[in-house]
Image (tube, rainbow, N blue to C red; front, side, top):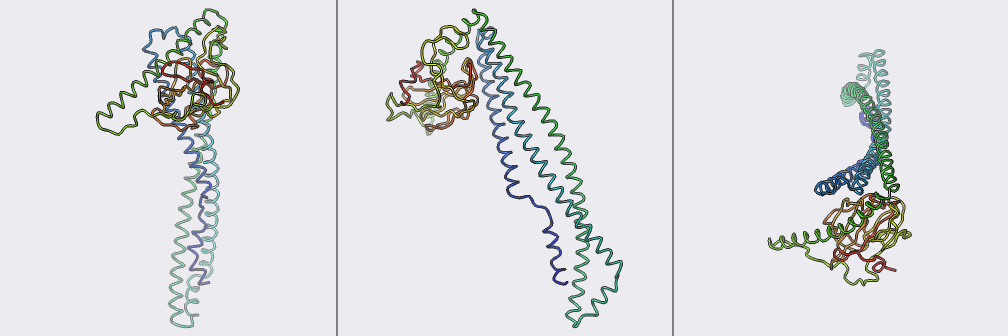
Length: 403
C-alpha cells in the first residue's frame, strides 16, 4: 500500500495523452507541402505580372490573338495552382480533425478516470473519516513507522489536491478541444466551398480558351493572323535571349569593376560534340518536327522553331545539359518557359510547361528537373516544345541531341 501511494502521481502522469511521432511528422509534412505550393503560387503571380507588364508596353497588345490566349491560360494556371493549395489545406484540416478527436477522446478517458478516483476517495473519507488516520498511526510498530505513516497521510492529502486540480484542468482542456474542433469543421466547410469555386473558375477558363481558339480556327483571316503572330513570337524569343545574355555580361563586368567574385562566362558544354551536345529533356514521341509545317491549331503553313515531344501532363522536364537559368516565366505564344544558357553562345528553350521548378540565375546540372510537361501557350495537347539556339538563331534540335 505504501509503495503504491508513492507512485500514484507518476501513474497519473502516465495517463496523460501524448501524440505519436508519426502523427506529428504527418502534420509537418502537410505544412511543408502547402508552403511549397504557396511559394509556387507567388512565383506564378510574379511571372504573370512580369509578362503582363511587358505586354502593356507593346503597341499591338489590343488586338493580339496570342496575348488573349495567354491571358486565358494564365487565369487557368492560377486557378489550378489555387486548387493544389486548397486540396492540401483540406487534407491537413481533415487530418487535424482526426487528431483532435483522438486527443479529445483520450482527454475524456483521463477525466473519467480522475472522476472515478476522486469519487472513491470521497467515499473512503466518508466511511472512515479521521479514525483511519489514527488507526494507521497507532498500528505502527515503531516511532520510525509512525513518522512515516504521518508523512504518507500528508502525501495522500496532496495527491487528493493533485487529482482535483488535474480534473479541473482536463475539463477545461475538453471545452477548449470542443471549441477548436468546431472551428476546424467550419474552416473545412469554407475551404470546401472555396475549392468548388476554384474548380468552377478552372473549368470556365478552359471553356473560354477552347471557345476562343475555336473561333480563330473557324475564321481563316484570324488563323492567318495568329500564325503570323506565332512566327513573330519565335523571333522575339531570340531577341529576348540576346538581351538577357547582354544584360548578364554587363552585370558580370560591373561586379568585376567592384572587385567582387563572379562566375564569369562558363562553358558548360566542354567535351560535348555537336551530335551529342544535349540529352533528351523528356522521353516520348516527336509529334511535330523542326521546320515548315501546317500549324496544328491554326491550320496554316508556318515555321516551327523546335521539336514537340509528347508526354503526360506533369512529366518531369530535365535540363538537356548543365547551364545557368537565363529566364523563367511566360512568353507570348510559348506559355510557361525556362531558358538555359550553356556557354559559347548556346541556349536551350523549354516551353508549354505546366509548372516551373527553377529560378533565374540558378545553375542546373545536366538532368536536373526544371519543370513539368504542360499545354500552356498555343499547344494542342500536353507536350514539351524544345529549342536549341546559337545566339538568337534557332537550330534543328535533332542535330544536337544524343542519338
